[in-house]
Amino acid sequence: MPNSKDIRTIPETQGKSRWTPPRGTLGELVASADKRAEGLLSQQSSLERWAAAVGERPGLEAALRRVDVALIAEIKRASPSRGAISPTLDPRAQARAYEKGGAAAISVLTEPQRFTGSNEDLEAAAAACKLPILRKDFHVAAVQLYEARSIGASAALLIARALSPGRFKLLVNVARQIGLEVLAEVRDERELEEDVKQQQVARGQYLVTIGGCNDCHTPWKMGAKGPEPDMSRMLSGHPEHVPMPAPPKSANGAWLWSGAATNTAFAGPWGVSFARNLTPDEHTGIGIWSEEMFINTIRSGKHWGVSRPILPPMPWFNYAKMSDEDLRSVYAYLRTIKPVKNQVPDAVLAQ
Ligand code: HEC
Image 1 (cartoon, rainbow, N blue to C red):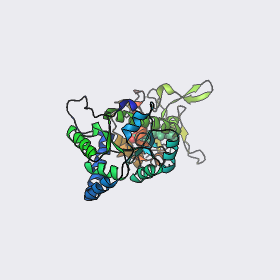
Image 2: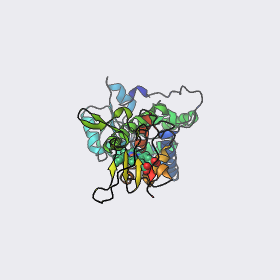
Image 3: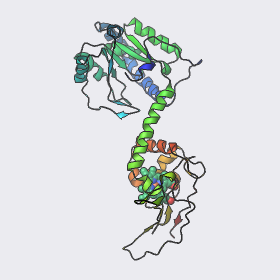
Image 4: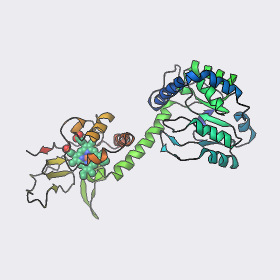
């Protein structure tokens, strides 16, 4: 089980002296769990009845104690850090395969938004095998525990960091009353954030590579095998120490525009454009740009997201079609690269 070092089967208190509501990704997940729990309130009494009517479920703790190496195998379609993992999985077939493979228990992600799970996945897995099922979700209210029991879970995950100590105790008590076991995960939100961040940065690096940003934003130099981007100045834009003379006249129509040897300055009907410094340098790069400003810039094709139109050959209209998630990843990656102090000249707009 991933992060098993962080999993305990008994409730523990956090090292922090005072609990504060989680922020970031965990905060978002908890907020959407609150909404889902609220939506369930009208069904609370039927869920309570169903929970009481569900027959004995195989015990999770007992199953984990039975064998020396007890594996909890997971059914998960997606996660906030990894994106889609297995969107089309068949929970029935997977549960059977895990059972045959010797798993001691199965955990099923039912969180719908970021993990694209569902109660149906859990019900299907529970019906397909005899193993105890752990419901992994963001359990924030008692009604969700009734729900967990009524769909066939043996145990529910409680994330200590997501719950105030009082609420945590309350949920443990409710679970006990209805014969639902509890697995408490003690893991702080910083770790979750870091996971998400790492995956995001890796995705951003990939997108910047295949998106060809280095082609124009990294100055080219002459290498042993011909011109190549000078990666020691990666993405730092047109070098300030390479002043460009007036561009050649190219009015005959067949040759429309000219590019500098560095491939960072371009003259054409739009005037002269210089690829910008995309490194996190605060004075000359995008160090002071917010994520929102970056996304607005690419989406709107406007300088700084608000001002004049971005000039060719920056193909912003292609990048504007990236998903929010991808644009955020590109931004996250750009924050991590080496800052290079390089003041790119202002564009010269054609009259
Ligand atoms: C074909 C060349 C080219 C490619 C490829 C390219 N850019 Fe640009 N980019 C430019 C030029 C030139 C400018 C400056 C345009 C201007 O001054 O209006 C620019 C400007 C920008 C700006 C600044 C806009 C502003 O507000 O001043 C950002 C941000 C940017 N590019 C990001 C990227 C990213 C991210 C990629 C890769 C996914 C990329 N560019 C790929 C040529 C390119």
